[in-house]
Image (cartoon, rainbow, N blue to C red; front, side, top):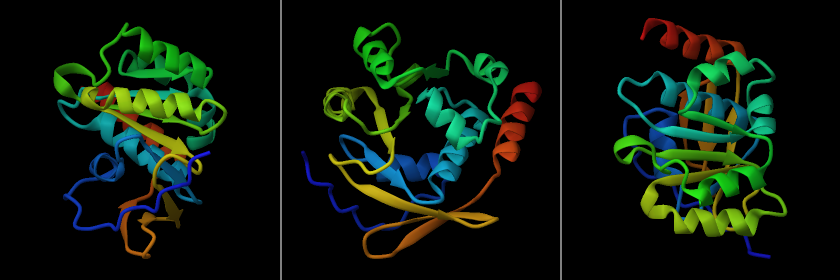
Length: 193
């Protein structure tokens, strides 16, 4: 079993939301997200990805991780409306097979990012191998939990802010959206575009 890596110190981050923070934090092979704010950070990331103008990034996420991150507020109707940019998998094995198959280009259109949000488990070695093989294809892997193969960051949240901290206690903050607010932001963007 691999030993978890210490998260790298957080230096200056680009003036960006969860999308920019994720691109900065994810190392070759992925990162772990733990703490009371992990779900809030996932919501912020999905809002950033699905409401940004001209963003063609893809999101691969496990159904359980989607339900837990949005406390059940993200329904099948919204999943269908976001397809094909959002792909929800029943289990990590399905995601692994989908990515390996090459049916869809990992990395989205025009070199965009593919965010893969899953949970560590018995397939973590396979997830790591695929993440490393897919590095050139812009696959950013995030584990909701401790990640034994890379850095794990602690996310905390209060009513208005989600924070990420590195091992030295330095951090960054983002506005925190409730599950309902995040879903409403995505729906509003879909109806206005």
